[in-house]
Structure formats: C-alpha cells, structure tokens
Length: 187
Image 1 (cartoon, rainbow, N blue to C red):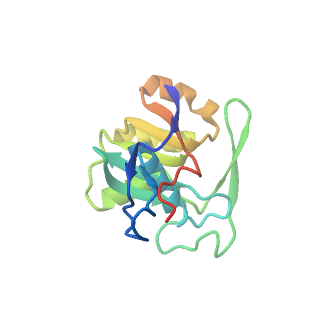
Image 2 (cartoon, one colour):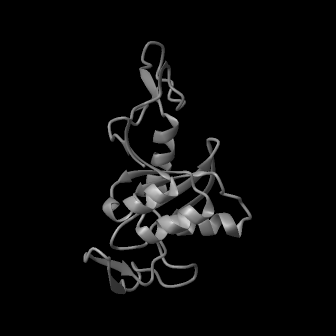
C-alpha cells in the first residue's frame, strides 16, 4: 500500500525550549516537531555516519514512539569502508530487464538497524521503520520477515520494483518528506 504524506510541524507553542533566553519579548514562536518529522529527522542525522561513497542512507526502527534501533549503510564492523578503499560494484538484472548496481562491501541501513537490534536483544516485531530512501527489494524482504508494519521513507528508490511485494505482504509504505524550512526554533 503506497501513501504520500507531507509532514508539517505538529504544534506551535510560545517560547523556546533551546534555553536561549534573549530577554522578555524577544521570544518567537516555536514549531514542535511531529512524530513523523522527528523520526525522519533522526534517520537523516544517522545517515551522516554512512561510509558508502554512492549514497548516505539512515534507518530508525520505532515502536510506540520509542527508538529501538538505528542503522546506516556501510561495511561490516572492522572491515574497510568504501570511503577508505573503493566501492566494489556488482550488477544484477531485475526480471523487468533493468540493471541494478550494488556494492559488495556495503550493508544497507535497514539491515544494519535490524542487526543492531538483534545484537542487543531488542525485539522489533510489530514496529515501524523510518528510512531516508525507500527500501530495495532485498531489504523489503527482510523487513517483511522481521515483522515491520509500516515503512516511512523520504526519497523514492525504485518503488516500482517493490510494489508487488508490498501488496502481497500488507506492509504500508508511506512517504514522509521533512521540509527544510520546518526545523522549529531558529534561536
């Protein structure tokens, strides 16, 4: 199931939570982040740790408004990263004939988030995931198997390749785009 959602700030409150108290009357209006905007912003922050030279992706697994695990794309722990060596690209052909290129060294953000949860004994069944880009078909299959209910993504990535799996699995795919100008306090 494909959905689009434009995320705006959840609530407007007077005053500022950043602690910048410039004096009486100088306080502006602060826009409080909504949950979707908050978790997608965290995913974007996490993506800044990515070591892949082809793209920075971040993922955050959430249940009941609590972060369970995070991940970004990069090499397995202790192995050379693409930004330290070179990407080793392999090509695969989708049944529709399109060619996909992937790096042999890189683990995708979604898989790293799942691995971190498993490593620390955190159950992620019946949770949601926020990803800076929609999942590839391989990651979607794993997300189905671990019990993710809703995938929130910012940028589309080959959605046409995952539409059938989404339909069959019942997982919701919802676009959540965080507006650059909607960051709340500017103190």
